[in-house]
Image (cartoon, rainbow, N blue to C red):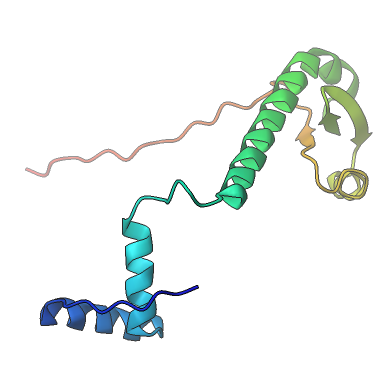
Length: 142
């Protein structure tokens, strides 16, 4: 439900709002509502259920990634000994599938666990590779 309000604002501010509205292909009213909505703190009386659910989903996903990564690191000595060079899938801390073809493994995992995080990795000498980035060096010219 919208509330109709009349306010007086300086001409320069109105021009800025009108230009922003043109650039966004919106009405000035919609732009002002968007700007106010971004600028004001959230209303504690409103139900922020969707935002809370999204934050909970993100936290659960982060926890799943962390759990499976730790399981992969713990399993790595055995995986290295038996499956070096192969692709593995870790779910709920357990090795659930192995394949030499990453694409085939991915398709099976995606079909069996469509909405869940599964750690997929190629078993290499080290569990997590060390990445080295070179930084540019600037030489002062004389």
